[in-house]
Image 1: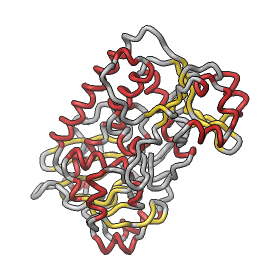
Image 2: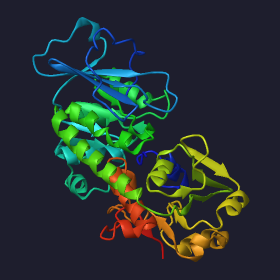
Image 3: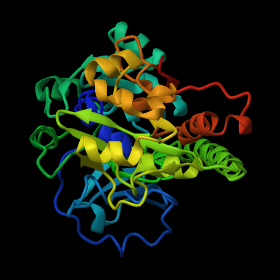
Image 4: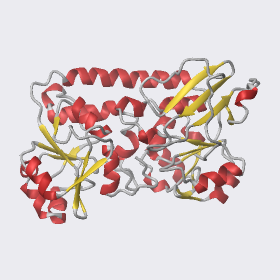
Length: 380
């Protein structure tokens, strides 16, 4: 969910459903003899060695053919000659530029938010702590992801720039790497499993030499998620779920193998498009959605609407759905930061346990009577 480049429109909602290019990857098998430290995420791997680690990004963007390896070098470590052609980054890093709001929670949870010195389109950041640093002039505006201000970044000389790519065309990141800056791809947004997304905190832990702390934080998130998952299985009913909304002349719903769909499954709910294949968004005519979901009990994540009136003003046909009539429509768009950034896009990838608890509170309130909704709110 990349809030700095994908605008808060219904197209960004699809992500609810759902670095600079190096030399093409060559095998690191000879140098990588240790065990991969990553358990759930499929888009990166970490291999620890004496004095250094190898971070391998295996899925920087959907259907990527390239992979990227980075060598994180501790002070005085000796790097094998076979790894010298990869980007070598001395750790712990002291200054960083990140390019997605999904990176901010990891920095804050690791206690290294003061190392952030630049971000593209800072208005999207919701975190109160990081906003204080922005207002104090400690975090500079560095353009937009698709058009980073390379001159400003070169002048800043951060120890690392954590970027992401929507494809293999990333000209701004290419320029930055050619200038000598350390650019690293982060593919957290391509992960589909809730715990897979959350595990990317270990990526940042490795950059700061805080592997133990990152592992401890993730273990706690994993434990909370599994406890909540087990609680959901005690539910005696599976309510039917509608999701998405109209954009132009099509209704977009999360596909059945997407991150959003998996949350609904884990919350012991019957998402009406759970049997569809794919991890992105499915576009459907209004009539098809109405026929299948008119009687759905709940409507989750209807784009970025903030009230039922706003929805019906946009499209009077929304009122034909039972979930709308019964006021069982829940949105993530109400919980915003000071500049309008949506907290769900920033925090939900790192805290899937909070998302799951919200959904269980909505669908099965008897299981979590004391939980207060954080991401999702009922539309009035």
